Length: 466
Image (spheres, helix red, strand yellow):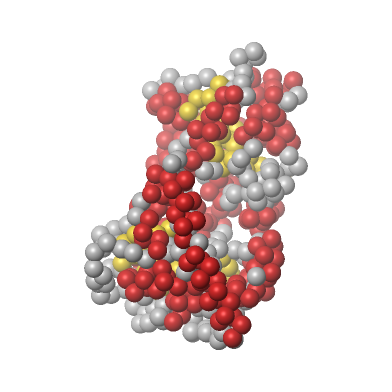
């Protein structure tokens, strides 16, 4: 694997690029009222969006007094990126004792998850809106030593201004699917200078690196996917194991479902062959639905109820299991389908460890799928639909390793789930172990990313041998 070139890489803007970037910055400044309106609407269902709105425009309470030492700035836009960043942050703390963290997010779920990463002396704020005035105030206030962007976060003004104030920018766990690459090339006058200004880019896959180079990254390298290095929550896995022993019943999970998929799941359950319905009923199979976005929890519950299902929410069935009473998840003719709803934040390790097989949300309608690594790391067999372009490489690797399967639609997914559940318990346990082994075999990206971040510091501190 080629070494990352961490020497400063400066793309000199020509007159047209300077002009377009200036116009873009003015347009973004003019759009601030639209952002405020959007945040106000989102805050009606997710109150976190109303928190410290002025920080998004570079206005902060109290005087600025940056402490001495290394300030590591990590931007993780939302929940998934923050979880991936947690692995890197911990590795850098291990190698640079005393390093302070400046954590930025853009979503309320990311902010809530980010709270778990903070230690004494750390800071958390919103990513500044991408206009020159907000960005300049952000850098003047915080003066980070290095910036780490997670996965896909490319903001032209932010990256160009970082170069002006000598903040090296590292794009970690970088991915770029074909659709996004095509979009970036159509806006090359804006995106290419931003990509070219990044100091180091570590891609998840060779295909990602090739596409990143096509859109302007100077020397992308392949580090692998940080999410392989993330360990599922041990306490959640322990609880799931206890519940599995008590239940002694199979669980079919619809994981990280998107709009429309929950109703399709219910529809296809009703349309199953009589033999498969009987098989699920005999096994007293539990059907568990976990929506991708928390703001949809209530909507999904109401949608499923309106469609005739009996919905048992996380607080109810979790309390029942904790009390060793259980809740009925069987198919009962005439009474509607019972669905357990996983309407809690940050418990995917619990749900995946409880399940025997998972249908991958976002892949049965054209949303691009979700990341299946955590599901596999918890030992859950994954069934993906046709739409996995956001995580194509990881999905194909899992399919090739026989820890995941691809089907044409939701109905075929449930049929495949029935096939998986009909295997002998010994075979099911072997499949669970194979999924965990596949996830473990692809670790190592965090070490390469940490090396690159440390090398970008103005004076790289001595690090401990890992």
